[in-house]
Amino acid sequence: MSVRPLPPSTPAAQGIDASGVLAFLDALDAAPDIEPHSLMILRHDRLVASGWWAPYTPERPQLLYSISKSFTATAAGIAVGEGLIRLDDPVISYFPEFEADITDPRSRAMLVRHVASMASGHESDTLYAAYGLDSEDLVRGFLLIPPPRDPGTVFAYNQSATFTLSAIVQRASGQSLTEYLRPRLLDPLGIGDIAWLSDRSGRELGFSGLHATTDAIARLGQLYLRGGVWEGERLLPEWWVAEATRPQIQNPGVMPSEDWQRGYGFKFWMSRHGYRGDGAFGQFCLVLPEQDAVIATTADTRNMQAVLNLVWEHLLPAFGPAPLTGGEAADAALAERLADLALPPAAGKTAPPERAQAWSAGAFTPDGGVCEQLPKLTAIDLAPGEDGWTLTLTEDGHPLRVRLGEAGWTVADEPLPTAVSGGWTDPDTLVVDLAFLETPHHLDVTCSLKDRTFRASWRTEPLHRLPLRAMRAPEPSV
Image (cartoon, rainbow, N blue to C red; front, side, top):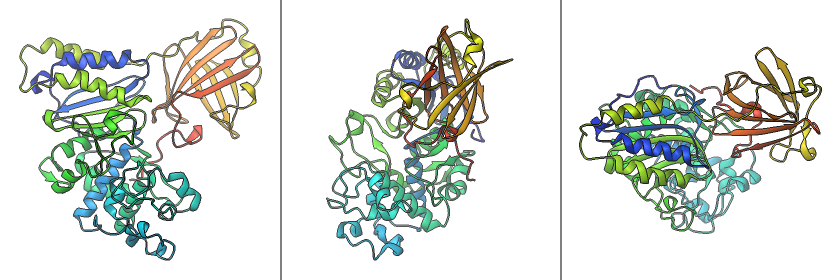
């Protein structure tokens, strides 16, 4: 959790009709393909609404996926301001050890501004191709892929480009991204521990892998809303904020959804309203300059456009030009609703209705012989205890033990942060919802006593392909 609370206010005092926020919450809860995890709304420098859907909590970090890019771009902006890097330097100039290897003229002409704006000249993501060319150094692998177009002329959402930008910052500063950002951004903003996934050489990924709280997302958005100034101190060059949040490259038709076709800045998307950083499965840092507002969300959804559509439909009209009178009842109703947000647990009885001993008689094996999404998950065992049942999921020989307790969510921090719900839906079937609380993701598990098999599938499949035992934030770097 951040170390200094954001100054609070009521919605009405900041010109927000709380009934619009309530309508937004209703719409989120009613959407069958959106699972909200958190929401924070800031207006006029005040926190006017915040809530977490249990079992998610304010202090717990979340995997932010590509909001990581916006933090990486912020590090680059600070580094440019300090004279450590320059936007019009060739990328290759920061990696002289690759000079002899990189011979393609377009690769050599690629500038820092091009990798900052997803305009490297490539026409698609190069991540896996780059790893294929050099599994030890993604920057070298990326530069070995000749761009088919001139840098600066075409947009492609390219993870390798952002990794290269992060590598430039880390090379020029001699520090990890977290080490570099800690005194320059994180501490001044009041952001506590963050953690970043790293590559094989220990470089933080930059394009993804950042674990931070919803509060940290909101503070980053507020910094950009205020032009790079926080509590009277300039943390980012004003010109950088302006450049990062305007279109550097156009991208009509490149991405499938309306709010992904309005141009791209320096790791920020342009939206129908304002601009944003976003991460897979519903992580948003939405900045609305016309409304003087910031909206931060975390979620688990494949339909990210639907989340934005609900913001435009319900929240945007709730922002008025002046403080509201007579809004006390709506403000109180919203506060009560935000305090009681919760995800429904999976249904089921907390103990088998019959043949309890049979359920713990041996391992359940994958239905069909292999678990398609988790091929190394080879067995699930069940054992009763005084406070519920323990499920042991064995993946690649490593056991992960989680507890299914009484009705509702059973939350545990060890061996990793999880919440478990579910139970027996009939004498032969156990259904379990396993939420990995520092990620957006849930694993749905069904065990069948009849043939002693299980099925396990991700509700949204994690992009980093980590083993189950690693589905958590890494140890904080700083």
